Length: 176
Image (cartoon, rainbow, N blue to C red; front, side, top):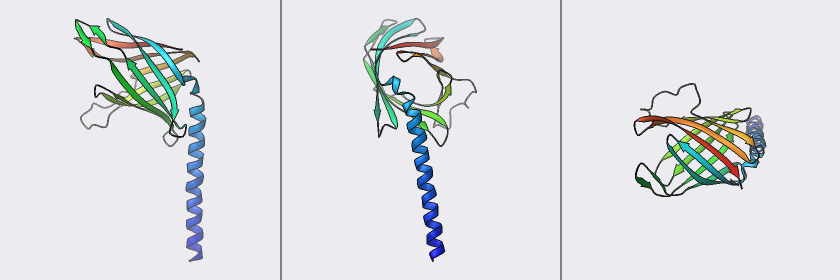
């Protein structure tokens, strides 16, 4: 009985140590993106459409996640008015899988799950699906986030069909 208790205690200690190591790695990665915390003014173009929006980042859930809130004002394109929209994202480092994750939900019902791989100056994003009927992932990135400085970043992509043409999103964001 003593051997079993000793073995169980050792096993539990290993789990606690592994969980602590994962949390330490996650905290270290989260510290590297604290420059994002605050409010950003962004300009974007998608095909012939262009507009502005704001986004705000804040640490949440024990500082192990960043919450991002988007505010898109009402806009007009091709004679139709798009109502104002909001979005919320949660982003963090996954120490078990060794990549960043981002979960994105919008006030119009759209949602995205994103896997982010580090580059020298940001991330390559890959939109992932929980659906069986989605085409297999391609090896190339769907979008690229590039840190230009602690007060500016860009996002290029994704590319998709819109109104009969293929368009690519381009975003430039500057910290207030």
